[in-house]
Image (cartoon, rainbow, N blue to C red; front, side, top):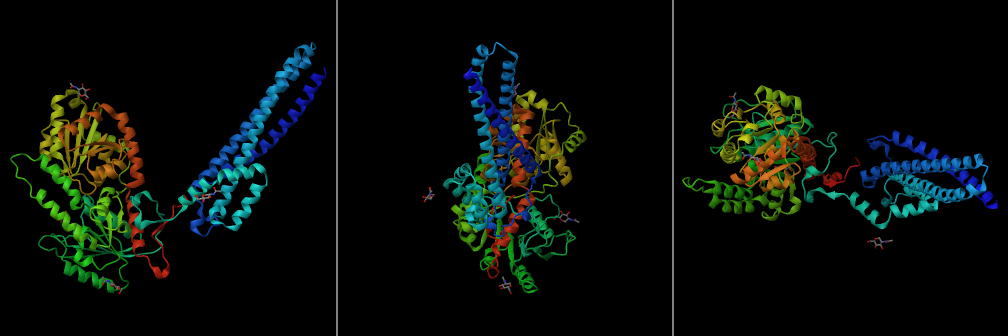
Length: 629
Ligand SMILES: *[C@@H]1O[C@H](CO)[C@@H](O)[C@H](O)[C@H]1NC(C)=O
Ligand SMILES: *[C@@H]1O[C@H](CO)[C@@H](O)[C@H](O)[C@H]1NC(C)=O
Ligand SMILES: *[C@@H]1O[C@H](CO)[C@@H](O)[C@H](O)[C@H]1NC(C)=O
Ligand SMILES: *[C@@H]1O[C@H](CO)[C@@H](O)[C@H](O)[C@H]1NC(C)=O
């Protein structure tokens, strides 16, 4: 009997403890729930009291804050649930005892089991609460750091706020040690360490620059051989147009030195901070250097001097550029990259065609470039590979080589299935076709059309199923257009498309193929297709495999020979629409992260600000701190 009595009293104590736990837990759970639901998703930078940006808490701290909040919440909830469950069990056994007068014989063993389970349950529940408190403490410390600056900064207020939290309870101190151990403190500081942008080795597109209005307006000179009439222009001209119109829209003063078009009509833009200075081209079509230099000097001495000079390729020759420190040149293909093109062309050459001179002269050209490139102060490579060559082969000091990948207008090129369907209907693409292959651009040899033509021709002959189930949409014109038409009814050559049409075209296809043979520069069409959410396929050249199709996650690559291209096309077909859609989604993600015009413009703007740092005003645009959000 005494044993029974003992059991009952301990049980009472257990119940009281459990009640205590549940009460405390409920309070905390409610508080945490409110805290979680009121926490703004995008932290307002003005909500912090930190003035020194190097002390601002990184986004990982904000993430931790939320994570600990959630852990704490779930720990309390878990603890409460266990406690309630245990209480239920006790109630049940108590009832048994009350109802059953046989009592001691049956209840003793029951009570025994009860006690062990009870102890375990209470313990687990208690631990749940302790963990809840621990996580809550960590969440609070993160909050303090966000508001008052990180611990590593040694702000007195931060410590004053954090130490009582830690000392308040033993377990708190333990959690402080756990959380801010030597290792994590080191990694935290490293993450927060500002970097020098000028020697940043990868593409600036990976960084995020605030998109608010620029903190300083620049007067920018641009030298470009030709200003395009329409946005359909390719490569260099397209880049010049997209970037500089965007910079002008952001309020910078743009002076564009370019050649006057032969038919004397020049596009007009409704912007008062955008000036064109036209000149007659030389016989070879280049900018008349002596003349544009005079134009430049005149503009440099009227009003403010130029903050920055940008030249698209050799728009401004090195003989003029050599003394300018605030200068950046963008390369859209350098001779060393072109060696790969020459090799491909030579391999694909018909025996009756004459051997190209380029092959033998290219090395001389590279050596020439290696000699004169250093006369430009800063270099912008449009692919990671070109950046590497500039540093390694051209031996330009790394703090003068910057990689900024091309970007295309993300407002125009985006997923829109409805437009895609309409486009297919318009051109009579039947729904029974299970694969729509798309190509766009000039239909010339350089862009790999002989290769694509041959691959498709062979596949249509050897595989009837493939022929019946695919359709090839080709946007653009050129000598290969007529030949594609001869391939049969499932090859549609659409001619050149306006930008809006082109956007619909990308939405209509399942995969975009760019069989280019040019290893230099970075084609815009691939980027447009990616932003439209399409899987892409292209030739294995370093600029593309190094910066665009870096893995099979987004698409396919092939060697520039017919067999390899056929293999890749068959693989696409076997993979089917579902796989292509997944790859398309991955493409879109990568595109948004790296290839938007906004990203490119922000990177260039920051580069220009950095190069024209005014030391007397202690400006430091070359220092990059990962932003809070
Ligand atoms: C923390 O790391 C530094 C540098 O690695 C080392 O010198 C120091 O002894 C470490 N401190 C503790 C407490 O481990
Ligand atoms: C002027 O020439 C450019 C190319 O040289 C062409 O794109 C444009 O349409 C022409 N404009 C007119 C009005 O003929
Ligand atoms: C442009 O003007 C500034 C200020 O007058 C001068 O320092 C600079 O040398 C000029 N640049 C060139 C290339 O003449
Ligand atoms: C056509 O190609 C597909 C995919 O490679 C293959 O599965 C199929 O057997 C081929 N059909 C013929 C008739 O060769």
